[in-house]
Length: 101
Image 1 (cartoon, rainbow, N blue to C red):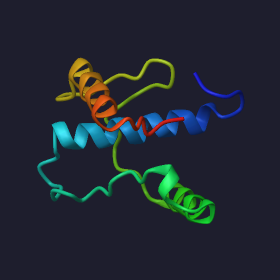
Image 2: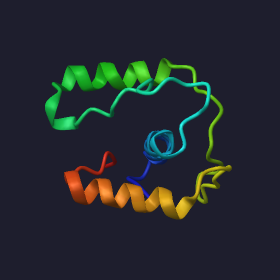
Image 3: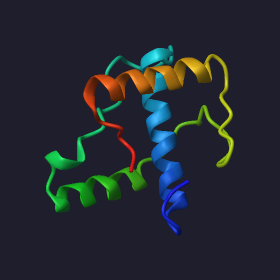
Image 4: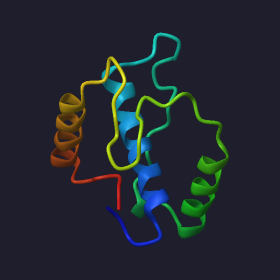
């Protein structure tokens, strides 16, 4: 799954990625468009800025997650896991950026 000892961080990255994609595909009725900030490209920020962003993201309160377990991530309606993965693959093919390690 990830580097030994970094499983929790890897899972957090996947949750963030899936939430971002799900917000694009199935926006919440109560949220405003553009409410989530785009995931920054790692190479564009200094190391200090990356660390500051990561520390800030750890301190943000999380809303109810649409995804479940660690090994098998379950999707709650209206999320379609196939459509979610296809969207991610299309984004990676278009931009060359995976947003994960």
